[in-house]
Length: 142
Image (cartoon, rainbow, N blue to C red; front, side, top):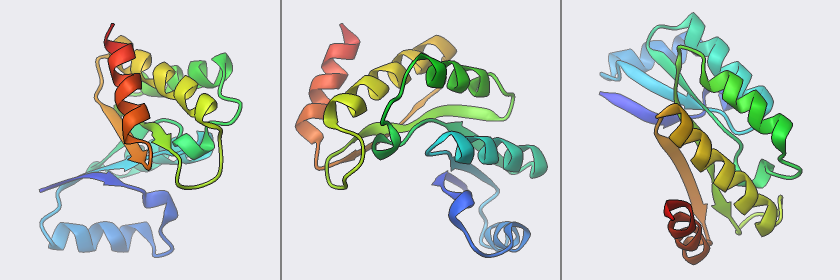
């Protein structure tokens, strides 16, 4: 069994205990998803240390404030890591305060292009923004 979306960086318990429990439950692989620059780096370090863990790198919509070319370059570099299997978590989240809708859309479109460029799957987060997310999706397909 594969857990395709975890946030191991948020756990308080020792990682070896958590991964042991997961293995006992039949979870043999997992993808830990970064939500900002530091958690993406941590996801890659975790994936290097534990063979059953892989990483997804991205910027959560509420962490997209000021997302620019430098951030995209850093994600591109992390995405080239052999243990990175996906781009994201990205998308639109209007439920919580954080980045503006415009900043979120800008970062989301950049993540979509990075996923295309790398050929990696895209991890999308949407909350209270389905209609706008669908418009972004259609725009990105054109």
